[in-house]
Length: 215
Image 1 (tube, rainbow, N blue to C red):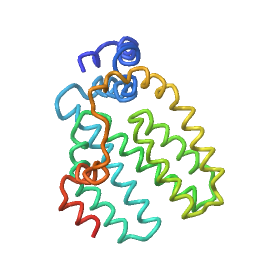
Image 2 (cartoon, one colour):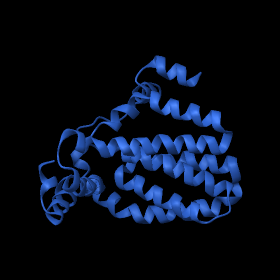
Image 3 (tube, one colour):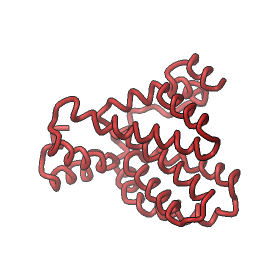
Image 4 (cartoon, rainbow, N blue to C red):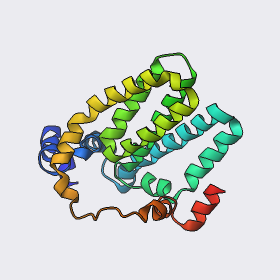
């Protein structure tokens, strides 16, 4: 992160042009943040903590809209219980912002499907764009949201497609730049089939927590 303190133009040139375009949004955010809050350990980690708190709120709000106050409380506690949530909430990395944007996109989608105001679809498209700018692979949430749309109100599929297309266009520059820099992660081995099971343990921290959440 030595280049974060450089002038904004130089920093973005370094990130986008040669190293890690997919994290340019987070780098820019952190650049402005440390100009206000400084570079102490607490200051660097605080934005992630705030972002994850918003994610927990959004998940609880979505559950509450669908199934009431008890569901909202359960959803909030499940989020807090996930080791990955507490881990990303204290890391000076973009993952907490990706989680926040995914949670907000789900809330916006649910309200778009259950209410009549167009603003919720605008919010959904914006949230998906933010997801892509903070973590491209987190856009894999969209197929799951498509299934949710079919289950809740498939008659709104045109709004869903329009919002998704708008987000796709907004994120396309980052996707193109990220693809050109894919050599940065060439050392990571391809995911094997057994990750379909072990991935749950990675997400929750252990098989025991996975079993409790499933129950």
